[in-house]
Image (cartoon, rainbow, N blue to C red; front, side, top):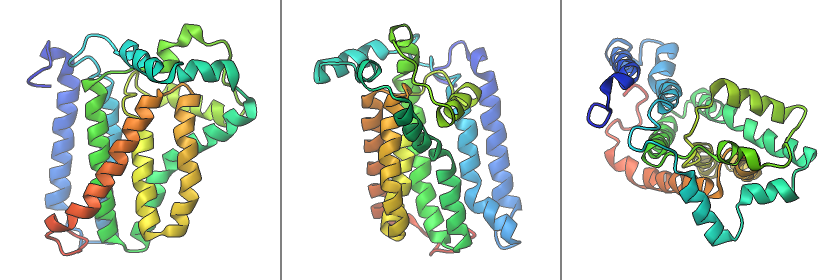
Length: 270
């Protein structure tokens, strides 16, 4: 932001927020020893999850950092040249069904408790080493995803194709809940890649490796989540593919390389 943000005054809020977050993190590191209490340990291990809520919100103000407009026209042209159709528009004309909508939106909603449930489970099981491994992959995945949000800004089919949809993908429960989430917390843009798909894959792979039964349960949920992002008009197919590549790639690299850089020897407090 300091180097590329012009006029710099447009990014004052984001810069101040980052400075405040940095101060909070330094305070946690220096003034909250993990051995003080179980609550202190919980905060020391899991505070990065909270940071990414703020970082995601920031991306809304960074969408035009490099490009003045969204680049959906490029991505939709590319997908049509490869697939012969725009998948979102094809689904709108051929496969909108209230029951299918509700099932897929349920898998979309299940993403939101996935991260906290997984990490709290690890904390209860005292798998502190695995929390650190998992958070390494999760944080890298979020960071790469958010970086791409403004390096290649895409607003998504629900905006780009808004005037071309013939039917509403409506549902009484889960679709309504997803709509509420979108209106209340989603930023305009941030579609390339799908960070939902990327991070959900990270958790699924870790579970398949360390908690196989839970991982198997997550397989159909992850498949439904990937489908729901396109069906629900939140993402293009390319967003899902790139998100999957990031999630899988980061997880493999983390599992392979992180032990080489782990100087804590598995201790929870460092």
